[in-house]
Length: 602
Image 1 (tube, one colour):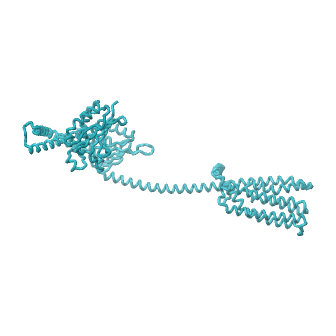
Image 2 (cartoon, rainbow, N blue to C red; image 1 turned 90 degrees about the vertical axis):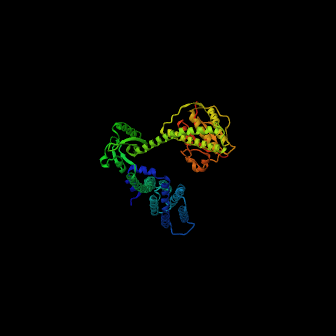
Image 3 (tube, rainbow, N blue to C red; image 1 turned 135 degrees about the vertical axis):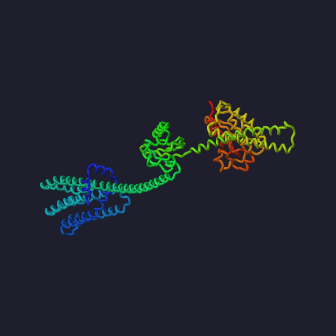
């Protein structure tokens, strides 16, 4: 296993800088403190052993307390023991500390003080015992102090400052003694001792840097290992997700292929140049071409009449440029046998992440028979309605003459029957007129004649025209306050028709003696007209289809009131043609409010 210094030496300079920057200084300091305290028991034991040897060598063999040398030796030995005990207490306190990282600086200061105290203790021994002993003992003491200074390097090298304090505590007092001893040789040695001190501090400083680099590298590599582990976990998770996505894509692809193959409508896939990439069996059946002979051919030239080819090509280029899907496109197409059919197409471009069209999915269905059926239905409805309306108008007119008494008095029972006949004839005529309006709107044959109108005057007129109808249900029609003077652009006849539908519905479904109120207000550049009835309200299950054709909520109840179920559908389409909209809401206190909005004229 490589040491920290070896790992640092083998790491490129740029990588070492990056790793040093990535290591947290707090954890590096904590590692240095940990290293210092881990060696403290060894240092204490070594100090005690060396102290015992030194004391034995310096002891003169007597136990006389009056002997100054013996007394000082005992004092020094006691000082060593007490200091060693304090250092072990400090060691155990560090071991029990909970947050060594946050308190690392404090623990470093404590061990620095203990190292200085240890050095001063030995410096005191050198200063006291060197002058008072023999030459042999002096050589022994000098050798011992040098050994202690050199031995402190591996113990305190992780912090060169602490080592410098420790070595200074030993050498500075000893150097002073040598310099003042009065011996020329000792004085010359005193000059060498500082150089020895500087060299050792320099060695400790370099070792300190090596240790710091090693700790930084260790933490940085540990962080990198964690990052790599997390990255590998994310990659593994992404691979699992990609595999799951691949399976889902394959499943979706199989579903789409099965849908296209079994679909009853023609499905093509075109490339951006309009060439056919694939087609389903329904497309083969519809156009009479086999898929093998169609692949790679230009569909815009093959499936459409010759005279429409250029127009189709322009539409295709516009589709590729816009990348917007097209729905409900009706075009004439040519079968293999030359027969022209009308198809309704949906074109969906498939766009990749680079916003480039890679293919276009084209779906089409033959609506030739549908269009023919609709044309025949419209012709039948129009013809039947006109054929019915002419005699029905004559019948109603005749019944009105009879019921008005122009032809003389008639029996009460006969009058009741003719009145019922007139009312049902009018309902039938209203139904025919509504059907004709719906057919005209859906076929686009209904023409509006907009003009600038004072909406308040038109509402007053509609109230006057429908009061007779409301009187039949004993319902009063009135305006809800003064109507403001607002102008709109609308077809007068059709707007009266809308008001008639809304007022008649409100009158029919309001209880006897109630009032149907008409209000008008401006809303964000539009004018809103509301018709408020006091009826039973609209059931929740019916609200989403109330503006549909032949829509009636409760058949038994509405049949008693009369109506075709086409009025609201006609109102909605007419208002949309005039640029407005219609809706409804619950009325406070019961009933329903039907409202419509039209753009207000400046």
